[in-house]
Length: 251
Length: 279
Image 1 (cartoon, one colour):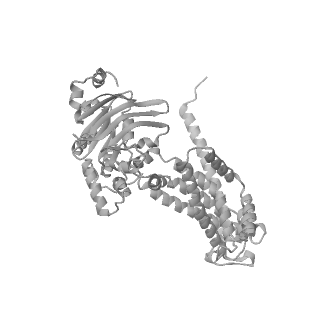
Image 2 (spheres, rainbow over the protein chains, first blue to last red):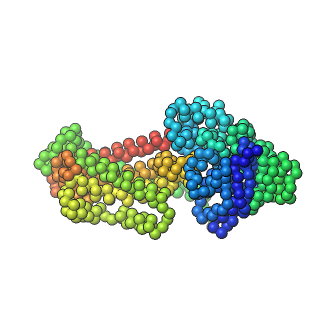
Image 3 (spheres, rainbow over the protein chains, first blue to last red):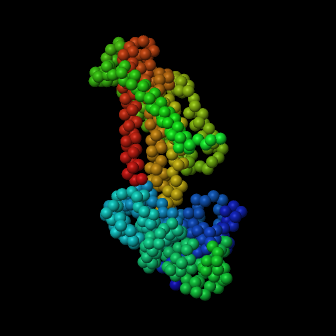
């Protein structure tokens, strides 16, 4: 299997607070990889390094290497703006931009210089279909995205990310505020998407990780405790902490 | 001690606040009503479109209407980019430092200076030193400096109140800093910025002291930026102060009040349409 993201001895601290301690992990192409662990385990921080959103935090010190297709994205020469076209992100809380559904999706493509109406329309329709939202909004693309329900807003955010035509999609607890039906729709979408994208899903919900991921990583206090195929992690965990976590003894 | 019924207290509080609101609104209504009653008989198409004769005792006020529009429009045109630019710099492109504190302190101080001091400065610097003479240009530059603090402060406030998550989302969709400011931050801050601009237009239109010192008080229509002219507020002041014609003074006041009201209504209408579409 091809490695898409290679994280090599990644250490990160906020001031004196060490958040990530020597993380080494490979994420494989066209798979869904789940990052799980209790809050404070550093799983979301890893995400924000991969998309370089960590740049917007103060007092951060990073060591180690994070490579996508073999190229270190922490290098000076790597432009975070170009990187974020290849690495899309869906955040825990859906935040539509205060504009129409259409313009929310078209935001990324427009930034990439696409301005033709038909071209944009094709992208918007394709992205919404992939995010399982098209049928619900196709008649009201010009209404405000803020009028959608929470579950629809999160699928809008997924569609907005897909419109960037990224190679990697990072989802940071995308279903934490959603009801089971909305969650199921997102999960269905992700299952379809993995043939085209490499997906990293951060979640506190071990059942969700077990349901839809191919590989699962368990983090605790900034350390990678266990990483294996999801089957193995959930049936025969190597570490006691992993077992306790997935059985719900802590976290 | 016997407890007073909380619903009774609620009722009292509500009545007190209602009365306060009523009091505020009625002051405004009384002022406008007096100006309306005293000025209405003299306002007619001729008054609006004719030039004044005999120092303003007869004829209309067209040159001062034009002068007011020229002064306010040009000042806003200069002050808005400068002020909004400063606000963007202060909020987006610097960290909090001694330098930004110094700028902010300067802005606060400028906002508190009486307008006649701006007039004096404009007179000494633009009119005399730069040899502009009493002119529209000197007036515009002086008023620009005068309204700049208001625009900077309201814009900064508006930009600061745009939620951080909106910026984060924009960056995550591969926008650069400038694209984010242009496409997300400024549109979201626009209502607040517009409020600052409206307040500034009000100040420019209503200003007398600073305008007399710099733009002069010529009764002729300013045809170039080097011409002197007068605004409606100045015209009103001179008519009333020098006892030329109280009738024409009230007529001028009415046109002045109506134009400020209509600018406000128009601005809020435009703003409301812009906001309500996507929120």
